[in-house]
Image 1: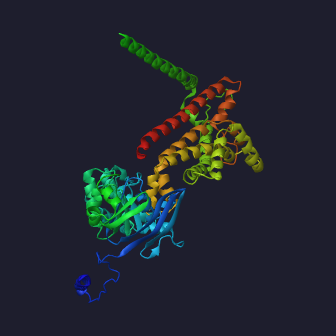
Image 2: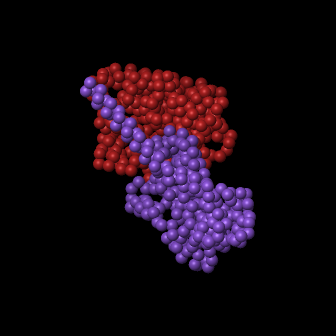
Image 3: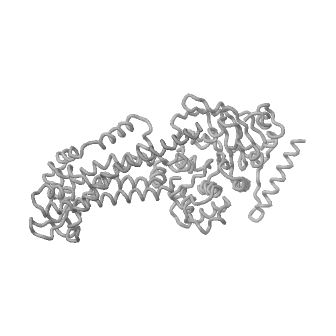
Length: 293
Length: 285
């Protein structure tokens, strides 16, 4: 029965794809072979295998294994100090910027290891971007310059391209309407929520594929938080998002998959509904119901 | 009743302490103010346009000035900046960005601290041996180099402190955008710290403008307009020295005015630097 269901979904998918391209030519779309039971159209964007991380002698992550799926929001929750930020910082090779940091294991982005010695970490960070807890617009740059700083410092000079990039990034970050008349004001003159959306626009401008967010709403008021969450909903259609949050309600609102971490270990990783209503692990249940953390 | 007595006693002690601190501040203030007042009172007589536009004249001839000396001081400061600023700023940036640990960074910091305490006459003699003797003549170039060497430690330390003040989150935000480290340092970090760095530069200029000893051995002095930087050049400090020890009244009078002008230049640069830092500080939230 399950096989039939999958078969039906595959057929429907083919129908959908062919009708979309009927204007041009009938392309035969072959359904992806690695579709899983619960998510037919999901492709693995990042594979995290056996990741361990140290700060000097202190081990912060103990053998974490998970798969991040494409065009999906994955939330990582857990009490303070459990290693959520360390894990997410390993994803875009920011962990190694800390002087005493060490790393073991592998992380694959679409089947290529990001730790391949031939790959420059800078290039990795252009495909996997990050937004931090505290909004950090560059204070000496205007809003316009803030958005394109990633492009400009990587050699893009064409003004038309830059203008287009500014408008499209600010629209994607739901900030265009609010700042389109004051693009040349300093970036630090915006309110906290606007600054955070500016940082998101800045990250989107370099055309990344995966967006990592380290507690992006912690420093914001509830209204700005809800605006950023709406933004995440929209961005999901085009980007893969991993969000670290200590706010469980936010994780439940925003994500499709949730990972629960405790003391550096990945305790449970499953669909959000399942983790919050019927977790498999007792530790997860204790955390969710507020017995600790 | 017991409580009220203790309160009055405390209040009295408080007032006494505030008074003593105020008195100490006034006592510290007095030498500076009296210096200013004395120099102004002695120097205002010759503070005329002739002073700023005329060359020095022979004794007894009226209408002499120190125009060439003022120009000379400005030239020397310019050369000193060209020599000292790039080295100082980049050394400061190196120490703040890459020099958190490691023996080399420690050595650089140590040398900078020691150099800032070297007596200026020693710098002058060294510059004489290293630059003037091989070149065979006194020059503004040598003088500028000597002053530049004195600027380096100040600029290095100020730049290092200022760049360290930049929050690390700014650097991380830049790295996370895929901007390489050296571009982050040049375009983001230095740009954000530029107000503070400029203040350090201005303070070092103020310090160096008032130096006499190094110039005695390097740029010597000159009673005429400078033609090139490769010849002895007049400077305000050396000219004031020469006139002050002379036995002639009108020259000594001019020396007071020279001292006044020098004081005003240094004061103006210092005040400007502090004001500039204050208004520019807002960006370092």
